[in-house]
Length: 380
Image (cartoon, rainbow, N blue to C red):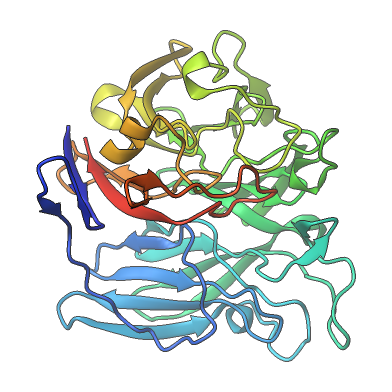
């Protein structure tokens, strides 16, 4: 494994290791995060969404053109969804990457403005004066040639789309809604949306210690038969095939592994036994994933009902410290590189002051940084 570091620190040989980054100002003053909405497309551009947690402005979509080395504003998510001036809580985020099919990019939207209830960020039930409740996330497409957006479907029950993937061969979109965690299936060609119900307790809308469950942020499709797989915080793995039309639990395999750590799936502040990010690796006919808190890379072969740990791919400082990273869920920056054989993983690493590790909060009731840490780029 080759390890590169996107931060600067001094190692045992007093050598400075770092990667220099170039920053680009997209001109969105209220932006606060990108989450998972960052993808390279066949036209050579990088498409991304900058999110907003403000009540008066939604998230915004941009592209970065490497040839001109410039960014370009494409649209406001709330306006794209046809909700401008309707005074709904805005479309604040896109929480999934873009998926390309027949010249179009497919993506979804999510709520970004929350209501703090009992110390937790919740889907608002008491909107600010003059505003209406969040209408629900949208499944959208963007035509890269005509630059036109299309509003395809509304996520039911006034929920956002916290995770999404796509079977590009068959034109099926799969996702999980937030906060209750309903499984969503949208058939592009038939323009048909199905709500298959809740996948794990009451999702992140449940009560801690009871029916609260952190929701899977990454689904993976087996392209050989179109079956999609997702995990739960309890460590179970489920599958759904559109031809069968039902969700099934895999009985002979799970993620409740000692090396991942021990978790109470009813408590917020971690992803539990969920995998953090996963992708299909066609040459081997299986998936590669990472468990966010422990940082273990693993192989998942659904046809053999088998999980196999590969190795821990945390940063060297994290591995030496023996501690989890400060971000409570782990990082979503995990994907196969353009050479088709190298995994790139953006993760954290502890900060040291006067030789002592800077410790953050011991617990946090949401997906957020518990303390300051550096960023590291890992390749495998």
